[in-house]
Image (cartoon, rainbow, N blue to C red; front, side):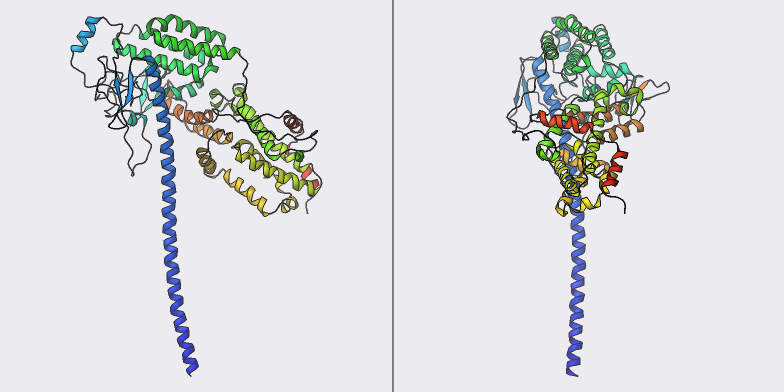
Length: 578
């Protein structure tokens, strides 16, 4: 009886302890879930903050460019940091109306100061707001600018981390949209420019109403509705018309001229390929000599220097200088087998080939889905080369593996390509990395189960990690996140941007209106964001030396690449169906 009683008591105690354990387990699980939710929120906030930081950095670059332009235009003005915060004080005389008669200037100075800027409709606070507005929306006061300050952009609150618009960042007080109705412009309910006629959009290039990056987006996308020759002709007409319009005060006319010259210089510096035709270059040179020289002598000097520099570069053969590049791993003797070449050096030479094509892509090749339309393929040769390069690398990798009849050699080649993919990842060459992954996941290679079983779990895990990085789920979310964090040089997978461009093109009309007279500027902005990112990664190049013997090996082996049907037949020979 005693033993039965003890057993009963022991069971009761055990039951109580188990109940407590299960209860604590449930509490810990709830705490773990709450911590997981908190972690997800923190990671999301981190992504939002990183995105906001990128936007702010872009704004800083634009403002720095504006500051350089105004310093070049007014060398007598000094810009010094303020001691009471992140502002800058401007000192020195700034007179935009040097061509205006003295009596007229004195009469205008005696007039009461207007409460609103004549062009933008914004309330002006302080004598000058050039820095916060990029030197455009509120030009310097002709009476000098003693004691003027630049206004700091508002910082978004923790509850609202959305990226502020350009106007929110560049004005201290915003008023309602200009009530003067312009039939050539269409705005959204929020006051954003939705679209306009071609002449209207070109006119905004020299207007203080335009956003800071308006000229950037315009130059990236204008070729879908206007050629470089037509744009230059319309700009010349815009200049000539502005000189005779009575609606401009002398001050506004000088601001127009400065903004016009700023855009012209930016166009020449960033998109010189638009002036590849000799007739276009001659027209530009004639316009600068006949119009800019007499009105803006300092700007004329800057433009002629830029023009002469570009003409000199055009006539000179481009020489690539390597600054202390890593020593290439050159194979000894004649190359007869892919396994003779260093894995890292293979990835380097592949990256150099991809880089040459990627850096040749121009904005006009990204418009109107030209790569998918037979009648427009002549307008995007480099984009097609990039696409064909992807297909060629993928076909080459498949062919090399399935041509090998012995299991031992197939294993070595399969491991070789996984290591090549790993090296491409280290070099930030995601285009060829995706091509290698596509080859190893093709039906010809993925069905070789006996070969895959021989490479070991460690190598399989490496390949799975690379696949996870390049997954298309979430619109290539993982890949986009990694690329944003990494420093160039980088060769992105071009398919990501082609998907974005196709989505924008298919989902938004290029024109609207009863007679299709308005160009969809909102679509231009979206396309400009994507094209701008493509061009961003063209700024840095690999500091690597080409190895001629490996490049020749590429030429030979790539010519032997077989179509998918042929590689599948060879795959069946390697490992027949069971």
